[in-house]
Structures are given as structure tokens and as C-alpha cells.
Length: 352
Image (cartoon, rainbow, N blue to C red; front, side, top):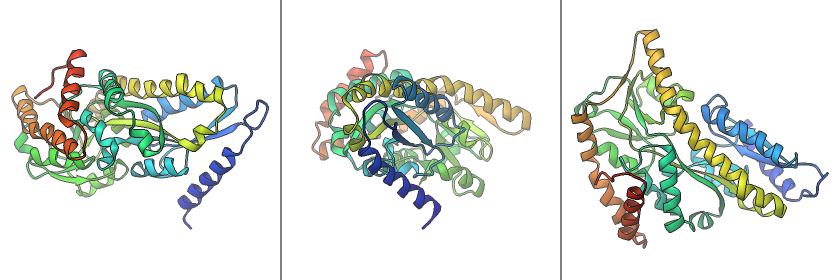
């Protein structure tokens, strides 16, 4: 049995014990296991998850103790849904793009190219859309929704400069999820599905040439070291979620359920979105300074003419989402119409 497997079984055993733990004041604290596949040094770990741990323990008066497991020791980014649902740990950070073939597909409308500009407004838009069309998603998945959020807009980390759409032709580019595969092809690149945990080494070895990722998140992974050209394409964008094990939630005392639902869970989702909002420009500036110090690398802003080309190539993906939604029995045309209406109410102009 590997060390990681032993840790996962230990966490599962803890879940069983926690479910039976007494909830009364004065009893041993309830142990909440938070599985984080990000590094302990990542901005989200330091500025969202650690402060939330302190908040939970303070607000509950010590009745709940949060045990943060950083660096994917309890499971990687693609295992989050199954791990939380199965009780390997109780709270996890979900990347919706990995679950194209599940009901989370509904929320992938927010990952359509150039739909959302950033975390604050994007999170607001997606929660309005969720309230109308996707409130049943997490029940279907048998997990508890703690909050949906949107990342900062993705950039490209490339081993070579990319200033035009033609420069991307034939490049091996990371595709975050199934829907992103066709986007890469639209741009003339060769899509390579890959988890963020593997990308640094892949860039070093030439397994991929271009890594699409959030600037805030990439600061922790340091993709800019093997790929020192950062291209501000600013799309797509990730819709993420924070989820809780249902059995763990249901065994909480009623007052703690109310506290998590009304205060603690919304606080965590807000921390994550705000950290992405604040972190993007800071991350790009730090990378720019690193490039100046090393004499290698550059943050590249596409010309308006080239940006138009990147946008135009992705128009088919909007229609493809509607077609797929209809195929699954969802009211795809109505959902798209509502999504565009929500964008407009929030001062955004749909690109198509």
C-alpha cells in the first residue's frame, strides 16, 4: 500500500468516526478534512483556505477543527468529485471543466470563450444562472454545494513567443477539459488534456508547448519558468466550485448547518473569487519583474487585430454548447437566451 493510499484510507476512517462524534458543546471538536490539490504556497491556499480554516474554528468556538491537506496528498484535481462524494475528505475544490459528461455541463456555459471577463462579475453571473437553471446539479451529484465561483481569465504560458494566431499553429496546448479540446483546434493548436499538477514538467520536457492557466494560480505552479512567454488571450475562464460531503453535512448539529450555509460557505466562495480578482494583475506584474531580472521572457498583449481573430475562431463553440444541451434533454436555446440576458443585465456584451 502506497503512502498516499494509506493517507486516503486514514481520512476515510476519520470520516466514519466524525459521523458518530457527539455534537454537544464540550465534546471533542468535529474534524473537517479539507483536501486541497493546490500547493500550500499557492495564493488560494494562503489567502483563502488558511483564513477560512481560522474563521471556521473561531466562529464555531472550536467546535469544528479544519484540517487542511495541501498538495494533493489526499487526491489530485481530477479526483475531487469522487473523493468528496465518497468521504475520502469532506471539502474540496472542484474544477467543473473536468466533468463535461455530468450535470455540471450546465455550468460550463460560463466557460464559453470570451463570455466572462473576470472573477467578480463572472461569479455574480454564474450564480444568477445557477439559480435559474442548475440548482439541482449538486443534488444529482450527491454532494453539497458550498459556492460557485469564477477564476481570473486564462492566459497562455508558452515556451516561444506567440503574437499572432498563426504563431499558435501546430503548438501542443493544454486543454483543461473536453470542451476546451475544440477551442484549441479552433486556434490551430494541438490539444493535450493535462492536469495542472503535471504541467511544469510537461513544459520542461516539451510534452506541451503552451499551458493555459489562471495567472493567479500559475504563480504558485511557476509555469513562467519553463514557459517564459505569457500571452494575454484572456479566455476561456474556469467555473469552479467548493463542495462538501453530504453525509458529513447532514450529521452536523442544526446550528452549525445554519452557520455553514449562511455564513461560512459564502465567505469561502467570496474569498476565492476575490483572491482571483486581486491576484491576476499582481501575478502578471511579478512574472514581468522575473523576466526583467532574468533577461528572458515577456508578458505579451495581443494587438486588437489579432485578438479579433482569436475571438472569431471560437464562435462555433457557442452553438455547439446549445446543441449538446438540447441533446441531453435540457432547454439549450432557452438557457443560452437567459445566459445572454444575464450578461447584458450585468453590463456585459456577449461576443456572439
